[in-house]
Image 1 (cartoon, rainbow, N blue to C red):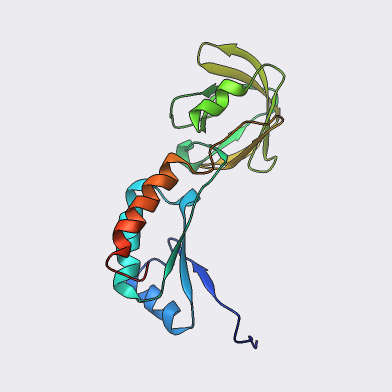
Image 2 (cartoon, rainbow, N blue to C red):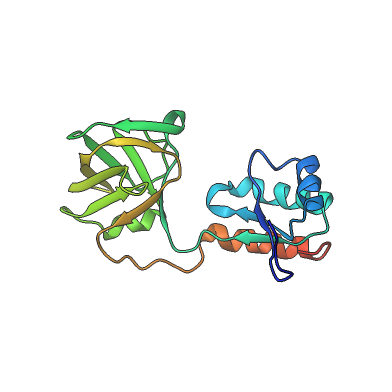
Length: 185
């Protein structure tokens, strides 16, 4: 493949590419910028990952912010199958999901949902319809079941105002700015 001189290579680092050896190898292969996807990086790992990249290369890195989005929480065994017709509690507090429980982030998104609203998780892998509100939980019926993993995209059938940057984004930016004093960040 030939690339023109304006072509740049952005490489997203993940579990298979996050070793210093692999970062250096990718650097030698011509990567121009290394990307950290904050949607799939736990906050407690951000600083360690930035330091690892800075130590392995002088190439710049990019924090791809989560931004305005609703996501599912973490699921038991990193994936749970939901049966058609079953009832699920949608929790406001952070919990580990199972066949009868799930949570959404940011938590306030749930405040905007009401009986009849549809919740699509992981691009229609799971479709829930809110049945009723019980205190700070929603009870939803599984309209279309499926296997749902952790931290998946959620869409709802109404507009919910979300901040441009999540709290996690702001924390990560502060860590990145602190690290930039010592690097090409």
